[in-house]
Length: 361
Image 1: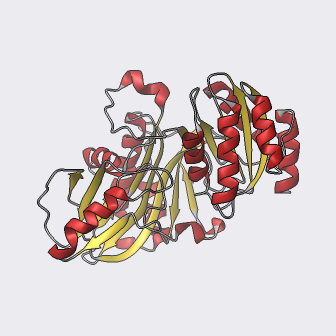
Image 2: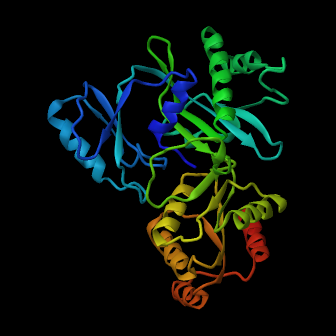
Image 3: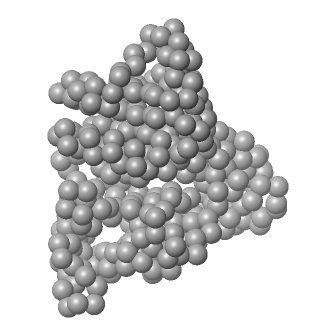
């Protein structure tokens, strides 16, 4: 489950992680705002800044029009139902920090970057710091948050913030495990001009299978797919329908020695719009060289998937190369559509993996 920014920040604040003061703006309702203010479209997708979904407003004359424009703005298939209105921070520097589950070791890791913000994807992958917790468990005397926080202070060259970073690591870890998170990404982690560290933005993904332990009530969005980040620097993205098939597809990519970037289940009733939304999410990953599409259609129709593939190829510059296997409902219709558009189908998942190996070698 991918949360909206305001939902993620509400959870962060419960774990004593500093976030900007803010209020929610609902479509069709009047909200009193103190200027200057940062208005942020609340959609479950990255790249909002570059798409025009984040605006700084300093004048009353521009406020209402900016709000109206943001509520109408389509960002990669998503239109917001709410906006987040935040205080304008005085920024000295922007960093990057995230907490993820490392697939290979099934352990929680902290990933840090010296430069955050909208251009974070342009950073060299080798420049990031990765710190693992090993056998760290809360309450058993083995907690070593101090050393992880100190490692961040050394890496960021923020020795004066070592204690703050130690607290941040501990609070972030507690937030991660208490909420059954798969990813918590703070980008940017803002150092203000008065030397405070504040979560300027946050992505958070929770494990749907743990929902029985929680009373989650989050805002629902259109065209929602089950998307989990596995490796932001992975070279192979995957799209499948059904959790079992999606996991098998990820495993096939990993077993072939390639790096899967994501787990993506488009669900049993996927249509052209939801599959296009899946492509849009994958386009956030700059290291992906190919996409393995593995669909066994029942309720989902192959022709709907084919239409989305054609639309993505035509509308998304820089779309990675595609390795496509379709089977099931309306396969014949889908094959005709793809053949007309010179898009190749492969007979099996194994054939897709072989093709992906060629594309990534």
